[in-house]
Image (cartoon, rainbow, N blue to C red; front, side, top):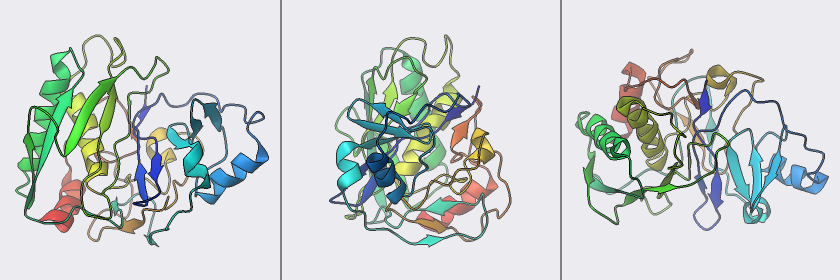
Length: 273
């Protein structure tokens, strides 16, 4: 089974889009007949697909895994630039983490299974092995990026609310992962979990999905463009202009480990070295 890497919460004051990650993919499109035409128009104006919109508590789920609150729908967005060449390259947001060199602290709470803690340490090690000017350090609590556990239900959502950097140049927080028993299987791989966490950290420091312009590349189904969503989608020079099937920032996970590949390393080095 493939799982989608992302949902969204938009912060008006900072023009920030917060992604949740991971929902079961390739389910039948939901019936949008209960969603008003006014709401569908608001969703479309944000740059998202109106196919299969689902009304959920506090807002709407769009594109299978993107959460928009009711407040998001009425909040104007300051659209960032969209500089796109192909379909599956590396993209960044307009805002990035600033004040380099900089150490970003990461804390984790709300999990009983040690796999989450071990995976967090592995994800941090992946970034630090890159010798970037942006490094990460595990702390006991109140990290710059907080990874928290919460019961997000049994509908296939693995996580939510990783985000993009603020206009002040700080990483987004928190990252919420579903701690409901069985969500990640009975014996999840530490390295697969590390890929999920590294992916969410990627959003927090300014990376869009590699296949933002065509989510069908990793998720299957109909072609879908995530749009600029108010935060920009700027091509990172030197990255692939054709498909990149192993990138850690693909929208959907196939349940396997995806360490940084050559294009991922090029993108990380371009932004933070």
